[in-house]
Image (cartoon, rainbow, N blue to C red; front, side, top):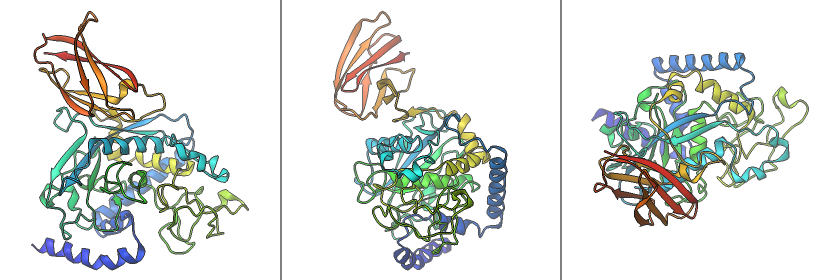
Length: 426
């Protein structure tokens, strides 16, 4: 009970602060809170030291030919009502946005100013929904938890980390060295999301996003319509700070040379001519660039954000390759369900079948950008069509329990083309 009242008191005390600062992201607040714990403070210090040493020893890792790193994701949906229980398709839209933004395949790269275009980076990181849960069972990479809400008047907040534990109305994290945990819930009013920086505890590692700022369809509300809140928070999770350094003058720094100094967060649609500081890093020489309001780590509206920089890429890599939890993701056995993972993605990549092998009841998930209206043909091992079904939904079951044991091919024909997936019936 004492813990409950402590959390409520913290929530009440921070209402004016959030309102006054228009705080959209609580990642730095969470970091400062965790640094009060001596053990966690030491871990963060060690994490930053290891990343700094790695950057010094790997100056070439900003190259575009660096290996593509793929991160398995589990999305934990916490809902109090049907509206908050966001659809699979809304989740797919967010994973696709992460892949576009982190591979610099987003269509709005054309809006990057010429002065920044040469340093805008393909981060070479991709994201996919996990296909195996921690026990090795098939999953679509999504968990759903009906809840009465968090401890702050029914809202979830960063102060008690209540979204991250079964015991406080949330959902326990899946192992953080095998999955990037993303919780989607109703956050405290005005707060869009927060993340845990590298070096923190495994039980709370991951990203939390409010359900009205996740993806680009369904429950999203203006100005958070393009999924950039999650892009921003995953940037924190990889070790990036806000580009203005979280000081309300020109003395703050994000520790990255190629992001121009700014005196505060951008707070409007797209202040492209804003130039709030002249004390730039030596990287810029005598040139005084405008504020980089297009950077994902600013507070600009989603429609303005469109880039990371080479310096940010180097910093992200330094934590991905030194933090034990993040490094473990690249050898994770969680499986991978790609969603918009590359420009060369074929129609086949937008389908997930599980379990496989199967006893005959097959769960099908389609997460492509085209219509879900399509024909599903079942072909036997000789290539003959032995069954046909019409579907018009993104997630459904196929009943193949009457088919003899053996290998079959499911052929999906729709607006996106033709895809083929093999299935084994036991």
